[in-house]
Image (cartoon, rainbow, N blue to C red; front, top):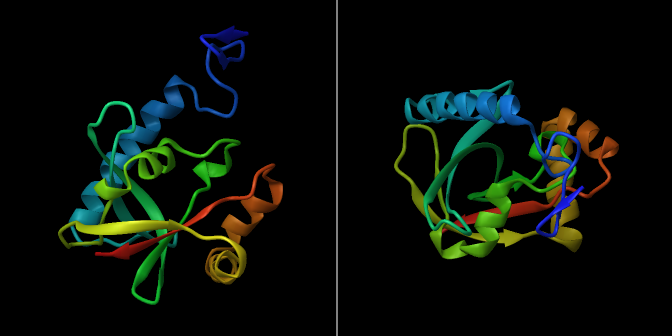
Length: 157
């Protein structure tokens, strides 16, 4: 099925995207994680968490997304995994559309503006080895995925 140039499945949504209940659960979980980060709690399921601030690519509205991250020489490295989905998450598109509106919020700290850089080549490989070592479950997700997960370095400005 196709509507306005977008392919949809029988449930009326694009393939690789979550359903209504999953989106509701994700919003609830994200709000709770943001509160934990702001309260100084830094982990979820054994992973360090930060809040990524972006600007909506179409709406222009501010967006906040809690994400797993790895520190790397004073920067933050994000894995664009989308929970193992077949598409990159909306936060990745927002980050690409409005890189000047990106900030990172570490546990118990105020947001800091950051510059995003998509890693490739040797930089990506080096960062990926760190990700796979620190979080083997992410490496397992990647081994089952049909796409290569992008890695994004966020450098505080």
